[in-house]
Amino acid sequence: MIAISVLDLSFVIAGASPAQALQDSIALARHVDGLGYTRFWLAEHHALPSVASPAPEIMIGQIAAATRHIRVGSGGIMLPNHAPLMVAERFKMLEALFPGRIDLGLGRAPGTDGITAQALRRRQVPLGGDDFLDRLQELMLWETGDFPAGHPFRSVEVMPSGAPLPPLFLLGSSDYSAHLAGRVGTGFAFAQHFAAFDSEAAMLAYRRGFRPSRWRERPHAILAAAAICAETDAEAERLALSAELATLRRERGEYLPLPSPQEAAAYPFSQAERARLERGRARLHVGSPETLRARLGALAEVTQADEIMVFSAIHDQVARRRSYTLLAEAFGLGEGAKP
Image (tube, rainbow, N blue to C red; front, side, top):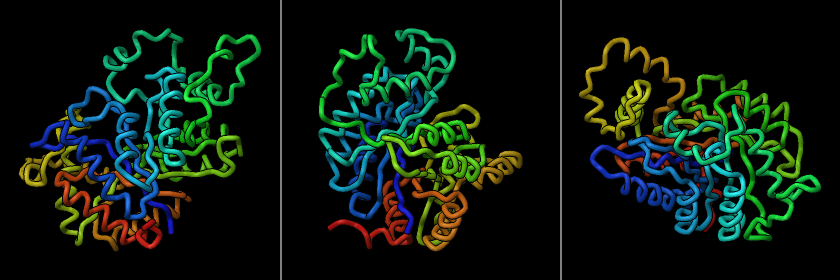
């Protein structure tokens, strides 16, 4: 059976505070810890009123401490926002504290708007253009220690010494990171939940181009998908109204808290808005356990995914936890869960 994981954005929900969203993330992680899920990843976003957590490395430590079995990681650290040495230090420290349970997912985007990105990076030395490759190479060199002879960084010891970097994954919504992850031999995670690029093309490009490396001997492709599960298709569709209205607002640049299904049901959608939502339905998987087992299973097969990482924007936290329970049962995860 295919591995199933969780992607969490610490969404702020209408009627609750951002601080409560962080507590909800920890509660969800505790809930899925014993259900047989493989990973629990946290995203990095800045200056968005709809997303509470700008610092996944802090949430990773909190969630790893609150759980026992599930791997915890970043989905992802936006590398252009950070000095590679700081990323190496923080994730080596997490690995030292929770050995064998940490993942390091890396992204190229800023995770925010242009002005906030400038504020995040204004004290960094400007290299000009897209310096993701330079930062990725430097991060890897902090682990390998293979800086050229005479390089000033050769004398720097990354602490805590003895703790390795966690497994690396490159994140993407196009085929750029797919090809790069294959060439450098890391894992790859594709954001099907918002990508306009074809997920099958990106996932297969990664697998075809994969070269074994010190980071990974075999390819490992994760498909991140938005999914909402309930006992019946009708109830799942009702819960999905929140995600649909949030998506529509986000496309207009409105990053509001996740609305309730009642608020979304009362929203006066225009015919054009309904048509836009219908076109986006290929990126939102909604239904009963049987419906989602068939739909996500078919998606995993066509993309040759090793793992499906489920992102669920559900307003009611009880219903959100229930959604993950139903998915675990549908995919037989509990059969492999640790006692």
